[in-house]
Length: 336
Ligand code: PAZ
Image (cartoon, rainbow, N blue to C red):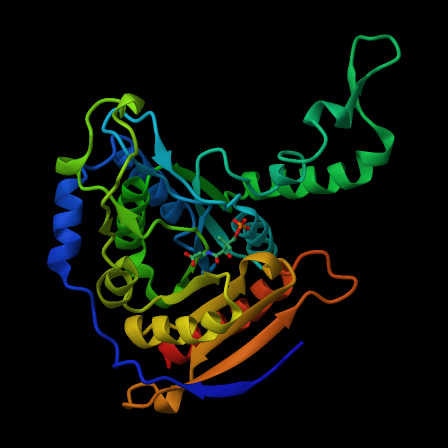
């Protein structure tokens, strides 16, 4: 399961994204109307847990959309179902964390994921009682459903899970910034687990069609602008002392590790979890900077491969376990 190696990259040392490109992105994308409500709910959760030293993880999950029209009929989307994020949330809660789950609306959610998006309709898990007056769970599903329900109710009653949703890339980025600014005072106690598949390109508001794009005009050409590299601002400005884990998805195996190292060299955060589209449920590789070489011109990176072991149902279980250990080390180093 473990595979330690080092590798170097010729990437330049950490370069923060200019704040002006981020500021102009926010200026072009107004604050979503629900953001104040989200901020109140996050603050309320933090106040509730203020007297406990519980660690907190902000998980991002699912894909963001990019609207093609201001009054949106069409948009660009991606494949992510939110499995990684929803599954990981349950494992973080089991490890004692408070989870803020920032997810794509209608993507998979912790606990209910066991019964939604399944090949069965959720109604197939139930049946009417013999007298037809009540509903019962089908016998074969009862033990597992009881266990999931118990964990779900406990997470709710202990206020260990806050669900916040987004749809578009700009909603996602507004939510990420607002959450990070509220979490900043908690510093090292906070982990960011950025598993969402976030769009790299968008259409600036002034270039976007206002009404539904008409098909009678023949082929459609789109010119898109690159979304500013928010990870850089998160690391260097919004969450400077928190533990930041980003994810890197590729389809070409040759690209995966170089791209993961490049991300670390560029943004200077703690871990990139590298995964390939078709094997992401069986293998993840954690890439991190080797501390003693971090600020040199030739940084070294260590890699730690986690393979889904026989008898383990979900790769998120060992993944979360490993990250929790690393986060504990980070917190004790930060406080010493
Ligand atoms: O949501 P899912 O479980 O279907 O997929 C998870 C994932 C592949 C989106 C995630 O593990 C990931 O790599 N996110 C970052 C994607 C990126 O490189 O932008």
